[in-house]
Length: 260
Image 1 (cartoon, rainbow, N blue to C red):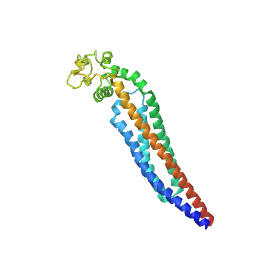
Image 2 (tube, rainbow, N blue to C red):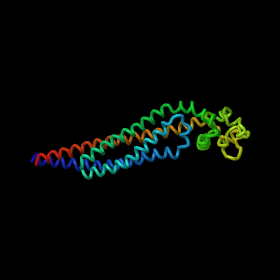
Image 3 (cartoon, rainbow, N blue to C red):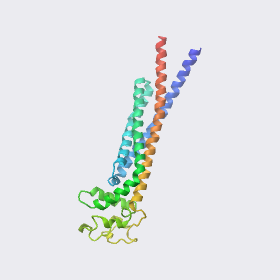
Image 4 (cartoon, rainbow, N blue to C red):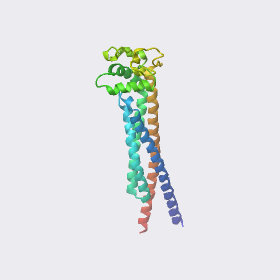
């Protein structure tokens, strides 16, 4: 009687874990889509700003999330097949994939957090130099476009203020044609509107573009870190369920073998 009860109890646990893993796989796919979406959005939508950064940590974090999100799609399908077929070998592979993706997303989250801590100092040291030395220079077209977009998107002028442009290589050159700031500083862009730096004509923002870009990147890093670490924690729960399911299947196979 006790043996029958024990078998029924094991069957009940197996069924419960099986359905829990199905629910987890659905959440896993949703989390993977979120990870992939955040990574692609960061790289595609905000790629112009990446050329203004001294290090590639921000971009690397986003690419890691894209890799992890892509692996989630494949791993989620493998997980469903493994649970349906109740094969220990497939479940073990699924378990290892979960741990691998967990480590990848954890790395992305930690990188985002570390970069967040030193973001302000990097921008203060690097952005002014990038804008004044590389704007409108041969071979620096990507930086020129990035600076123009930065000033228009964030309605700012110069790294700290509009006077920063007096230190630039561009303003004293013939190419500037008498401008005192680039045309992208203007509230309404018209040909050679940068020749007048009156507050009614150009953006005068306290803290300049550094403050605006720092806040923008900080918000994105928090999203990257939160999504990466959040989904990584979800995967730990899935790995625990999978390990329990593998153990129950092992016990069932052992008991079946003992009855032969």
